Length: 404
Image (cartoon, rainbow, N blue to C red; front, side, top):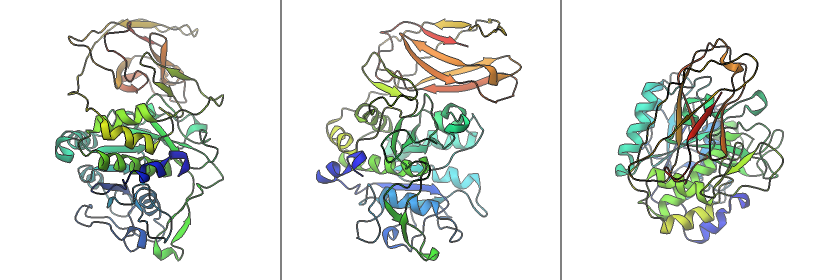
């Protein structure tokens, strides 16, 4: 827990009290002493593991909100309430997931929707309703694991839920507090937290289902385990300031997380607002103490502004590797601070995996899509997201240049 400075948050008398964290996973063992506080009323119809082999959700729940009772470990937000939605396993459907998206204050998702750049309509509608109506109109906080596909070229902009502006996408760091060798990267990675590295463990004892015969074990490794840690920090922030909106939670994390010293890995940038971002760390490693302190005095963002600009350059893409580009100028009637930038792209090309797509403004580049083994024929309204311009003036910079 030292890596996320959570003891400073606890010392300020916050534990997540009054906040409900929903674990969307393979079920949570409510018979475990650390998780006995699970609220059936706040959970989905299916909330328990189907068998002793379903341990993932129980581990994640303990990392986020496990009770401080000297049994196993202690969760980041050990005073928070717990709910569960079993979204995969025997007999579960996507409808169960969408129902779960409407419950709780923070929803922790240590799973992904593989090989789909687009969020299913049911999922999008449920999340939009959650950020609009949830928490009395302040919006549910959605937290997602970035995935463990770094060595295979995994990029968060290739997974629909991971590049939604509604979500906080979480990467992992290892025991050395540097980018974990498996943690997927991308311009939409928001923040990182301890997740262990390949072959090691987190060094934290967490809960396992009682039926396994060993109810306390060391956590494994993966962005799955970094995600509930960030979810727990979000719960601490909401206790410190219940009036925070979902965008405010994102803004606090973006401005209080800390990038480690350059470890020679993928490039990082510092934008015109002075905010740094890395493809592997996002805005940095989450700092619970700093996030809670900022939450107490945070001035909520104004109502969200959406600025849209379009271009149809019709440029031909050469086979010799030469780039083509198109620049769009967009100005708002009233200036505002940029949060998320979304590019919706249509390209006619026989092998989209051959294309490298970059968005640039004033020297800050976002690699939206690297070359990959994708063998489809082009893009039709594909959506890509970057958070690298967070805090910049919408009208204060130059044009937005897309390079292919």
